[in-house]
Image 1 (cartoon, rainbow, N blue to C red):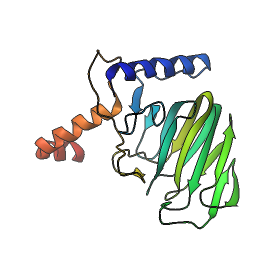
Image 2: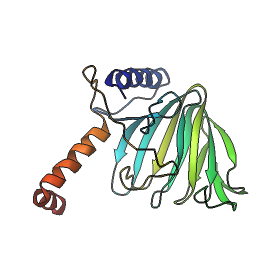
Image 3: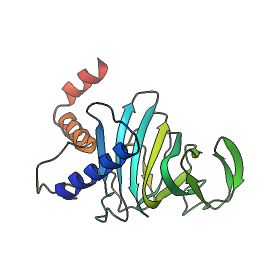
Amino acid sequence: MKRSEINRVIARALACFQTHGWALPPSPQWDVTDFGLGDFSRCGAVLVNLTLEKEYSEKLIYLTCRQTIPCHGHRKKKEDVIARFGAFSIQVWFGDPKKWDRGGVLQINNKKKTIASGAVFHLIAGERVTLEPGVYHAFWALGEEAILGEVSTKNDDLHDNFFTDPKIGRFPAIEEDEPPLVRLTGERTSSRDKHAKRHPTASTKASSG
C-alpha cells in the first residue's frame, strides 16, 4: 500500500468514529491492511487496537461498503464480533472450508444455534456473533460504512491468523510516497522481530524480565 492511501483511510475512519461518538484512547494503535492483495477497497480493513493484554484484547474495525476481511480462523483466540455502527455480513465454516463441510453450533446474540457450514448471517448495530477457536470466518460491510467491535481472548496477529488464501499476508508492504500520519502496529511489530533476530540475547533478556 502507498503511505498516502494509508493516511487517507485513517483520516476517513477517524471521521467516522468521531461522527458516531467513538472516542479513541490517547495514541491509539492503528492497523491498516490490504492483506497483501493490493486491492484495499475490495479486501482490507482499518483497525484500532484499544487494548492488547495477555488475557484479553479489544479492537475497533472500520469497513467501507462490501470491503471484506477474507476467510481465516484462529487456533487459540475466541472472539465476539459486534456491529457498533451500520451492519455487516459474516460467513462461517466449522473448519477449513477446503476440508470441512459439516455444520455446527454458533452463538449469535447470546443464543446458540445449529447452522450449516458456509452459512451467511447479517448483523445490525448492537448485534454480535461469538466465534470459537477453529471456526473460520469472513465478513464484510453492508451500507456505505460500518464500525465493528472485537472483544477476544489474547490477540496474536503474527502467529494465530490462518488464512485459506496462501497469497494473503497479515500486514502490508508500504510504499513511502508521503510522511506518515501515524506508524502502524504492523510496522512496530516487524521492527521488533528484526531486532530480535539480530540480537537474540537481548531479546531473551527482555522477555524474561
